[in-house]
Image: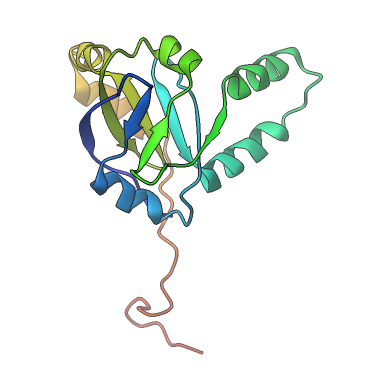
Length: 167
């Protein structure tokens, strides 16, 4: 699966439109569509999903048992504000007013590629978040990485590993 990377300093126009940077658009096109879904992030920022990623995440949420109270609450929060988007001919997306207000976005935003999605932050909030980095990043990495089992990359049939015999 493609990976989204990079940090972009951007502006939103008076109508709430955000022009997606060319470098980010090129990465987003690797997901096979120019359709997106935008929604609230885990804290006051916005998350832009390529539609294929949204469908994958949404299927996982849909599979949760809705009769369990915390699952139902999560489902509501996950879908609240979700809005399908397609860029216009100038590669701009129209951010919904309710989501702009949720994220406290003014005119300047920072966009960050984050694996298979994009975070859109008010620039000041983003810079404040950067200043909140943990005092001991090594300890955070140790605690986090100790719980991860690495997934090897999918084999490439055009470039098999050494010693592998093709059928």
